[in-house]
Image 1 (tube, rainbow over the protein chains, first blue to last red):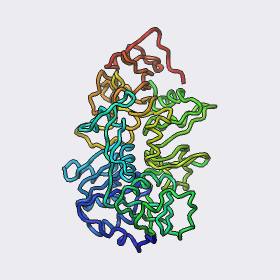
Image 2 (tube, helix red, strand yellow; image 1 turned 135 degrees about the vertical axis):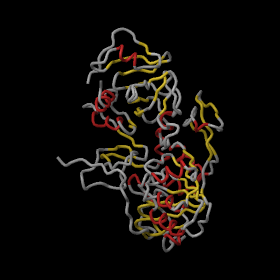
Image 3 (cartoon, chains in turn red, green; image 1 turned 30 degrees about the horizontal axis):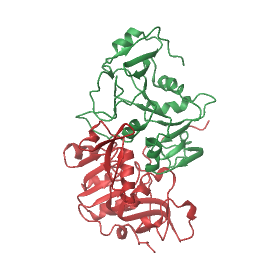
Image 4 (tube, helix red, strand yellow; image 1 turned 45 degrees about the horizontal axis):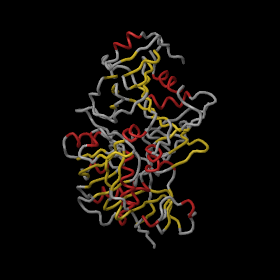
Amino acid sequence: MDKVVKNATAAIKGIKNNMTLMVGGFGLCGIPENCIAALVKKGTKGLTCISNNAGVDDFGLGLLLQKKQIKKMMSSYVGENAEFERQMLSGELEVDLIPQGSLAARCQAGGSGVPAFFTPAGYGTEVAEGKEVRYFNGKPHLLEHALTADFALVKAWKGDRFGNLIFKGTARNFNPLMAMAGKITVAEVEELVEPGELDPNFIHTPGIFVQRIFQGKDYEKRIEQRTVRKKS
Amino acid sequence: MLDRNQIAQRISQELKDGWYVNLGIGIPTLIANFVPKGINVVFQSENGILGMGPFPFEGEEDADMINAGKQTITPLPGASIFDSATSFSMIRGQHIQLTVLGAMEVSEKGDIANWKIPGKMVKGMGGAMDLVASADNIIVAMSHTSRSGKSKLLKSCTLPLTGVRCIKKIVTNMAVLDVTPDGFKLLERAPGVSVKEIEAATEGRLIVEGRIPVIKL
């Protein structure tokens, strides 16, 4: 049950060109910084990335975009990234925009053995094109399919050797859902501990969903919008 | 005319004690500054927090504590944190009593467009489509016309839709309106704005019945 690997390079072993990855995080909050850096170093290309956002120009998934390693993004919101915009408008990058709640539910479904589900989100919009519509309780719903990935890369606050994870604050976001949906789920953590050190009552992601775990390092945790108030 | 803060202040009068509320980015965010005394509401941010509080004091920012606009925030006592699927279960499951969001266009049928301008950079819909498709009670905060003076309250939306027949109430810099089966019903007008001016600024069907009171702030 010991799932610990040495570092990010070992953790992403087996990621090959043209694979599909899920990458946790919301904006730059809760992103697997170490795994992204290792992927940049490895130079894997043609990746399809399922991630709520696409990072900023020089951080997060923006680093993979800079190196043209991403073929397709599946996201709900991709602003704040000039290189992304350039690649999308020039047709180099394929983009599938998905309502945020549907994206979350599709990841959860993918990890839960639910192949598809109906949701009201997107009915009557471009998102509905080509999708089955069915009425429940008099209201139209769209059929949405589950998502899975060859690898899911997630970031947690604390984790143990068995892969049990605890997230901190709003860095939780998509991470637990993507952890469920990866054929191989890699968790990088700020603090790797021994089994028994984490209270089982407060585990967010049970270790069964995690195949590899490692102690991350040098977390930058960049803040996208620093908003503060003055002490009065 | 109302400014951005006054639009937020007017919408804050719609808040009811005990409500869970989701505020969109822009003017809606300002509503948190105008919660009436004696009213307790809990703000949800769809990235995964209930009980969102004010911005942190300088030097106390936490990269792991942000709202859906990616701004640093603080949790209030009694706050809770959850994943994105749970967050949208709250939204789709109609556990949220009020959603306030901005719009580029609203039609007299209650359709809303707020995520995409063809030919321009598409940033994505974020959680807007889930919110408008599910919420029972949606208020739109917007300017009544574009900068060039074109009405944003239309017979039909011209931009790609975010949701259909979902908007119930609109608060603009000029007026408060309900969306009814017969069109936009004028409820209140902004100080210094005449009914005639609102009629001229509204392309969709406008229903005016009796004397229209001025918005009180």
